[in-house]
Length: 298
Length: 181
Image (tube, rainbow over all chains, first blue to last red; front, side, top):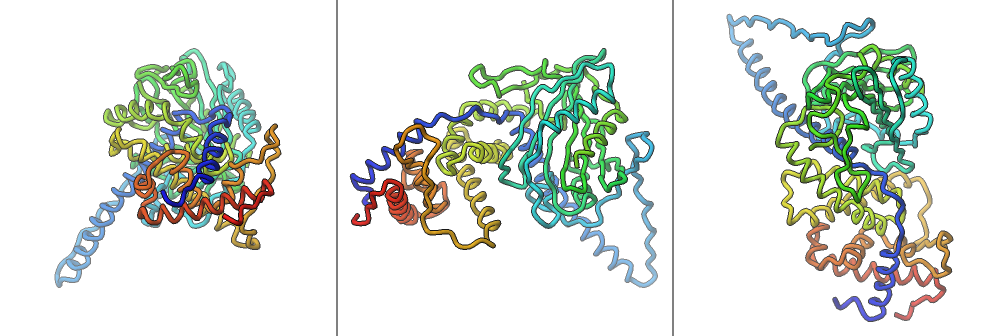
């Protein structure tokens, strides 16, 4: 290229040498973190597309109904209300009402971005998070063997979709090895707005159960899911008034089930198909107790 | 084998995709992080930019041909970097305009030699992206144009401007201003 002369070449060679001589710190990103976030984004996109189709169909339906209603002598029979089946027998919990607005962000609804404003992305004290998780688990599951297996923190989160921190604990009891994973995000708007926007974030169109705590924290409990019979999972989303979202997930596998994918990269791990305890390590009441304790972090 | 990502339903086609993606992630993440570091000059930020790029790639993985996966990675990584700069600018709007070229002395290096990598951070983000893609990642002008979604003419002009700023910034560090050039 004409704009690059010999002097520039020398400068660029020096730049290249400097870049290649950099000794990077160890990688903290795990394959499963990336896949987890990627999958959430994928689900959100598919859901947004589905909602778009539903909106069009609903629009056509409403128009037809209005037109028919306006015809003389025509009386429509009202449809019965749709009932929402409760997934839990926990007291103080009720099915979340469907969001009042159909407006959703088409890029990613997993992080409350449908709500106006920038989510809070301040750094999280991951040591306090891990400590609180361990204390909460000790109280909720006193007979289980518990230990933190991994935690991560992002000191300089760069996007609203950033995982600000995460921590993973093994929960091992007579039923086998399970774990509880906590992921921290920020959200904008009120806890209720954020919880509304993420009611169907898992791609399952069953209303989650909801409970509002005295300080305004909203906890949203989703039904158990089984993408692999070996390791089912159940998620609880906790939206605090401090604009922190804690996603607490009980998993049917422990760190002992993790298998290294690449011997040169200790961070690349996976759980083989079928591995796991074939049940959740916590009951719904234990999971929600853990969530309530984590909510005290604010 | 599949990955432990929290327990939502995984159709078989997604499980297959994950296997291919895992291989790609394992072999490319470190390189992507290095490129991001050249772009932003900070390892923590570089890791997050690389992570954001791979998250974005995962969502499109079934549409990515393996032979073009590296080119796509360059695109999403550069976009993730430029997005962070855009967001940063929005947050800094209330501040006074910064001087045209700001270069901090590199005190982290044990060597006294001034850092070109630091000087590179003084180059405007888009020009910096062109320089990194062109001269660190060794892409052709056409490939850089494809990556950034612009014309080859734009790449050439951004290269010239970026190099001029780099020279000026490096000159400010070394005290050898190459203004005559």
